[in-house]
Length: 558
Image (cartoon, rainbow, N blue to C red; front, side, top):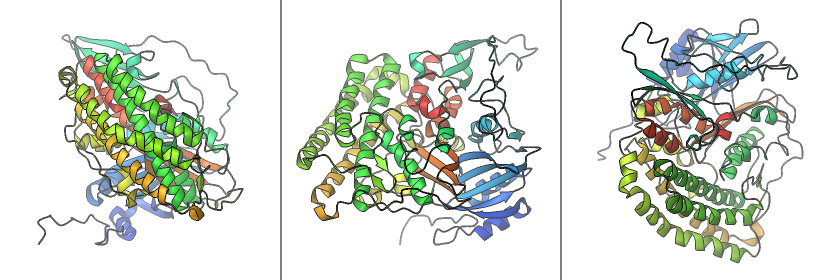
């Protein structure tokens, strides 16, 4: 007899692991005013004044503990917010809450009291679409200046209207909280946006009490490029695919492309040949290694300024994997290699020579990983800076919607490659790496060991591709020249990017361009947790915590 505890079924979950949407509707009761069918799951339309209760009920009683994304959009007759819910234990169990509001009064209740990750998502919805969220703890613009006029993703936005952004003196945000407190001894410190430790144009509004951080407010938006709006103005078939490379531009392009491809292929009901899936899987893991190498190298640079050893080691190995990607795709960063229905072209010729170069890398890299451990994780100075700093407890990580190495470094065993399989991952042998240290050290260890698993995956893909029959090397399925999914078809799909869950929401209006295109950035969600990791720490420890998140501002701001 098994000694394992039997799985406790949540409300609305059948013994077969399926969702009983009727039971979930009964659980929500009068909050539900309608139901919709999205491709990935069912959606409940709920009253705009009952959002927090509905989210709380689904989290506490039905097990939906992962608010993956919040999408806001405007129709001709209404505004709409969509809360995309999953379970960390099983992300294939999905449910969406659709919250409509009138055009005259685009306001609904905030969900930030239930899920901390809703804080930034709702601020973005307010900033770009114009929906207001009652009882939100901090409803202000997040990507644009407070003085900005209009909402860029609204239907009546005038993009030609001049904008005036005055330069205002920064004030200590703790002053208003400490009114009347004579013993207040806080100091306001600006870190960034032009500072190497912020990994790009990130501004940290930091409040210190003595030498300890008591409040940190990440100020983003300096690199906002309207990526969602550009995708909404581009065709599914040909014009969107080059854009994903530019979100997380640290060599993770194919992972980004796969997020769009997975959503669009399911939306248009497109098949991908098995051979192309293997190539996708191999190239995606090459990108994961390249991204993790830069994360580890820059982390060492942040911690103790190690430029000559760890950073240059990482850059050297990254160049080797970039050479393999360049041979495959023709590019070094902006790959544009995936196509809807497959990949752009087959492996480079001569194939044997390419396989030989890949195997040379995979044979040597495990020994290099041991060197990284010797130089980094076994380094006493590094350990003093990262062990027991930047603590992120697992439940806090979940509430902030963290994913990827940040979440797995808090001991949560969650990886979409295994838990919501796509590509060829479910046919291969590899392990999900977790570490229950919950600190900066644990997140570094997870990235190092994930690269070892990526090597295992690449080796198995090469074995398969070497033996693949020549007559069956189909790189693309038969895809119509123009894609026009059915009107009012909606989907949310995600992949395991280098930094976590990279998701795409698409709504079709029957044309060859999306009516709404929403990017769920893992770096955007992970960055919210910095306030938990930095509270009570010293400034150098906060810099270490920020480095351990491995953010890229191109993906945060989009």
